[in-house]
Image 1 (cartoon, rainbow, N blue to C red):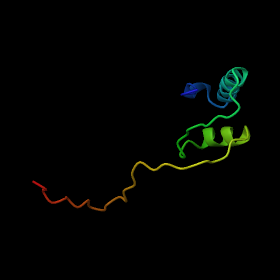
Image 2: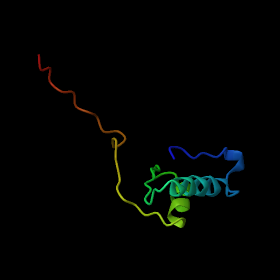
Image 3: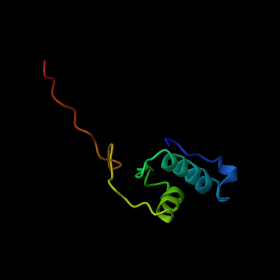
Length: 79
């Protein structure tokens, strides 16, 4: 599974859980015994859903982190 999405007006009705389980069962039926999910840590409903299905945090990737108001220094020209 690459993306599971639910239209916001239908949130909270169990559709995300149902879609995730259908996808996991599909993969299991094809012989896959392990699955890894990616979810943005700020998507708390999805994190709760996946934890409720028995998933746990494997790793955490941070693309960038910048504190508001902190100036970024420019690098010297390396010509």
